[in-house]
Amino acid sequence: MTWNRRHLLDLQSLTAEEITLILDVAREFRAVGERDVKKVGVLQGRTVVNLFVEPSTRTRISFELAALRLSADVINFTAEASSLKKGETLKDTVRNLESMSADFVILRHGASGAPHFLSRFARCHIINAGDGAHEHPTQGLLDVFTIRERKGRIAGLKVTILGDILYSRVARSNIWALLKLGAEVTLCGPPTLVPRVFEQWGCRVTWNVHEAVRGADVVNLLRIQHERQRKTMFPSTGEYAALFGLNQARASLLHPEALIMHPGPINRGVEIESELADGERSVILEQVANGLAVRMAVLHLINGGQPGQIC
Ligand code: NCD
Image (cartoon, rainbow, N blue to C red):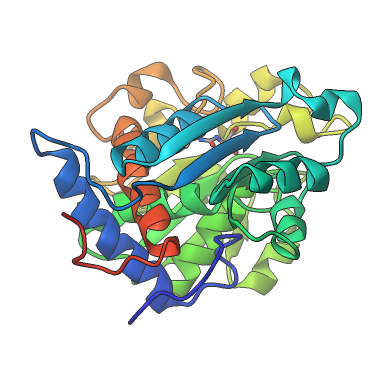
């Protein structure tokens, strides 16, 4: 299996083999991260631009560190302080970056489809770091990587995604990756945020939280995406926490060795109780650590690198 894509725009269009290849290469990079010298030269001479038009902590720092560890030159572009504020189009911004020899543009944007749009004309490689409510492919990859490393497989696992599914790009990327790799995916949350249409993708939809968590091998909790909700989707965060938040009683219904996941940022006491977020079954910080290895793998493969070529 070799990689021959120029961009990483979504997980919907990837095959199970391509996803597995990224996970295998990420494992090689995780081993690099455990060495004394954590840097390799595979992106030497390349320029990576982090073009983040929406707020981010983890994803931006993770891409920056991944590119630095691969020896690339890295530019961080903050939309607030740029000509995007003066009316320049995204297309013109990217054309200018290309004139300065940007090889990779890592794009986070509020509009679903923005990275796909850029990929239609861009000469550089485009990596989607989250587009609206559409997809967040590297988050989906790091989540399945974390599950596979802990459980040894994805196929046949019962994975529950609990929270704001409707507005979540993390949910969509997770769903595609999990289904392609053979997991059984259950979605749960308030009916206004978990539409039945997801059944057509091959997911189980339930609005009963006990049913959703009972016997699950993995529960992935999602933040309420207030910034994307244009109307009131549920009465209050207090009521959400009471009806759908993961607490000790609900967590006791999970498989005894279940993993508790969250892409961050966490709203403690809303989607998850603090003790559970910091507890033994939580892999939340492991997800962050794995994100670095996964992003190194994605940059390496898109640059034309192959597995086993890391030194
Ligand atoms: C997510 C995002 O921005 O899509 N965070 C992340 O990248 N780790 C999820 C969220 O904001 O809730």
